[in-house]
Image (cartoon, rainbow, N blue to C red; front, side, top):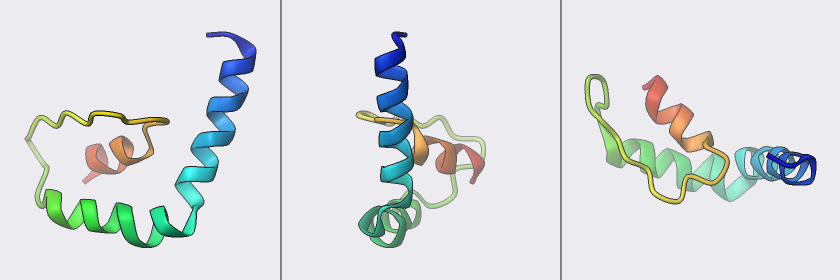
Length: 59
């Protein structure tokens, strides 16, 4: 991975993870809709920085 891409990816991930719509609306709604994820395989398309993937995997 190039340094430029890596730097951009980290900033983008931080922004998305902490943005109001994502933190307070999108992610909570997706987590509710996903329901119980323990023991299930999950395919997240368009995962960007992977923030939601981390939340789904931890659930």
